[in-house]
Amino acid sequence: MNRIFVNQVGFLPNASKKAVLNFPCENFSVLDTDNNVVLQGRPVHFGGDDISGEDVFVADFSQLSKPGKYKIEAEKNESAIFEISQNIFDKLTHDVCKCFYYLRCGHGLDKKYAGKYFHSPCHLTKATVYGEDVEPVDVSGGWHDAGDYGRYSTAGAVAVAHLLYSVRLFENFINLKIDIPEEDCDKGILPSILSEVKVELDFLMKMQRKDGSVWHKVTTFNHAPFIMPEEDKEELFLFSVSSLATADIAAVFALAYTVYKNFDIAYADLLLEKSLKAYEWLENNPEPLLFKNAEGSNTGEYPEPEDYSNRFWAACALYEATGNNKYYEAALGLKDMLVEYDENATDKGYQGNVFTCFGWADVAGLGSLSLILKDENSDLENFVRECFGSEADRLLNNAKENGFGLCMTKEDFIWGSNMELLKYMMVLCVADTINHKAEYENVITSGLDYLLGCNSMNVSYVTGNGENAFKNPHLRPTAVDNIEPWPGLVSGGPNVGLQDELAMNIPKDTAPMKCFLDKVECYSLNEITIYWNSALAFVIASFYNGNS
Image 1 (tube, rainbow, N blue to C red):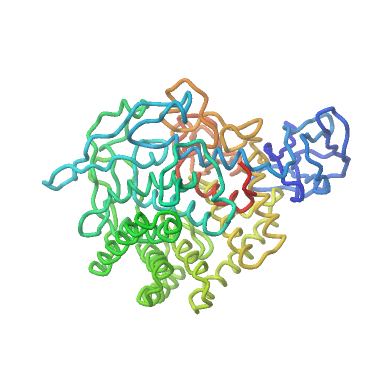
Image 2 (image 1 turned 90 degrees about the vertical axis):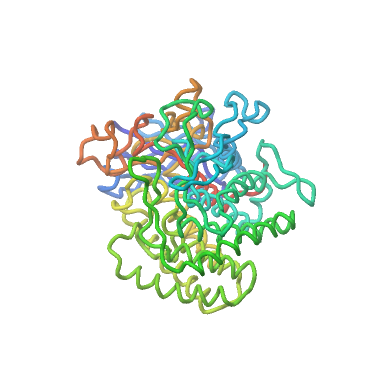
């Protein structure tokens, strides 16, 4: 089928703009809503593209900057409608961040803020500490992690970190107004994004034991069936402590201290106290304490092969928060371990450089951000800055190798491929703050284009944003409430692994970009998670102009 693929949300006036065609033509036209031709051009033939399976023709219309709504036409084929506007990312930013409210666990969603997506309180019973004869623990609150109702310390910490580093790096993001209940603070009312993040921080504080260590997760023993959260009445379990969770919590509480101290010093001090307690436990327990699911339990495991990157992040975040040189020295020692791991490990879950990783399993990049924010021209800071520069160069080279301008390769189309793309876009956003280059912005824009519809599936991977936005996330409440999904959810995206039963019907030789089905059952293709949303929030925060 002849198709014209385009970002279905739209473009900033001065941004690079392109559509991708999968058929030859002499000319393309850009039409306004009255079907007037406002621009014509000649597509450039890129050629065969192995990640999309298309013979690609690129239609560049970057010279069009006038605000308005448009479509592309060529050989009687039309694209989806898109918009050019200085505020084009306002709705997207709001929707992506409002999702965290809809994913709240505990006291339910208020009709005032949730509208038709409201639900009753859920998961308020105390949790049994698995394998220990101790009193059950109140760990209510926080965010449901993904398509299930589990809550996970490492994943939650990373999602919070993405949002708080966005606040630190991109000054307008703090002005985002979200329709949620806002929290009181010393200076009146917390900004919307900090009010929402506080919900998860409060939960993560409950996950910390008195000795400073942190439980890895709280879930039922097995995944709930597809029911509403308030109908999930199975026993909750706190599963064992891990050094992974403890280090991530030490890090994110230190990071949160640097943000909340400007609004509520008592709350910030509490966060720092708990961060120091977690780090003290890490010092007293230097051997990795990794995590494995209890026998027979099938809820998310979030395993990691090492805890060096977690401890590195904790040391860097505490150094930035306190200025205590012992944390810098610890980070230096961990840097050497990470360099060796990066060079020799065969079980790495990433491509590129470990010091630029922003996923839940490899968090050294988050530590690098704390060093960059410290901004003191230290040897370690200069080292990580160089890492971002070299990784950004690798990504720019990737983007030249496919017709969609994506900084991905075929190997990146794994479970959660959209997160792989978002992690790379985050690297480019950071590299751009270090050393601005138009090439960085152009490749970031191409990534947004892809996520919002300029892909060979002709699908926007963000619900409610784009003419052909996906509609069937693997997410329990939206699957059973008989309502279209709330806007702003980010799909995991194409995955050549095809690890669920329905996905296995896709032929194995399908091009990576086409290994996708918009089906609820496709958890390996179409699940959502809090840290995919937070990663997209980070990227669009770099463009957000502060309008609500």
